[in-house]
Amino acid sequence: MKRLARALAKLIFGNEGLSKRLERAAWIQALAKRLRVRELMNAGLARYPIKRQLPDSGVRYSIETFETLAVERAYFGNPIFATIFAGHPPTTFIDLGCNSGIFPCLLAHLGRGAVPRGFCVDANEIQVELARKNVTLNGWPEVRVLCGLVGSAHPDDGKSEFFLAPTSLGSSQFAYRETESGHPIDWKRIVVPTLQVEPTWNQLFGPDVRCGCLKIDIEGSEMNFLRQESGFLVRVDTILLEWHVWATTRDEITGFLEKHDFRLEHTIEDAPRNGVLFFRRTSATS
Image 1 (tube, rainbow, N blue to C red):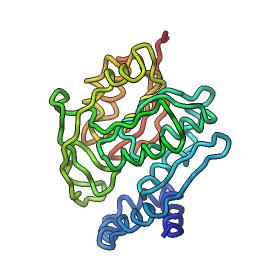
Image 2: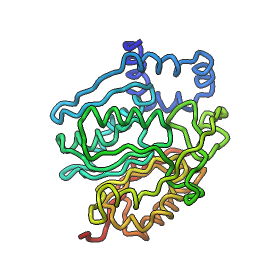
Image 3: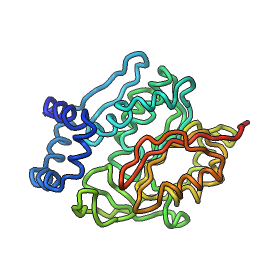
Image 4: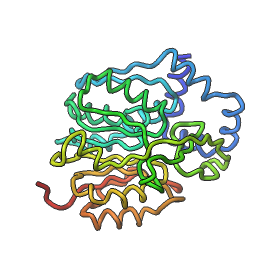
């Protein structure tokens, strides 16, 4: 099963064009669902995880789900991230929608093993536990992994509904009706704590510590979050953000962040239904 996972990962995630075509092919999605491919692969990887230890940095992480292979491909398979963070990779971060915690591994690797400070957030408890495993593997004392929802439609209620998708990469606080392939998602509704970033950051690290990189991958909640946490943005140096066309537009995201002294520096992905953008603060910081 472990060898099969590696082979499929190389075939699918090693070829950007192929992976995108498969994502959009309705018959592939239907066949995979009928054959329970994802469930079988995840069962195999849970029993026989793929262990990585990166050269030069010594950063370690464990791959225990098929989705983590996709996340690994997205970060370590794209040289743009080495370009973005060349010279001075951020050592402080916030990872919203952290999945299994691969993003802080990327930052630590680009920093040649520099110990990061920050926190990860996900509303899926399974992903939270996987991210905690990867933090523990590296012995990072100042990285926390929290279960909760940021950008909630009702941030003061203490708890919010959240919808788990069959794949952890599509879970959202919004039960949108169709995937990119055109197939409806079988949502599972749960209730999770709401979380506000600024007081959490202040409690963990104090009000004077800056956030070197804020990563936002929260499946349609991005504008809710930015509006709610606009006061915290003044303490952020760079933003890596995935936006979704059914919830906002690229122009809305870019216009909002320009008003808060950020410029769009890189377009990492620009697909019909979403995109990934990298912003850098333009004003001087103390």
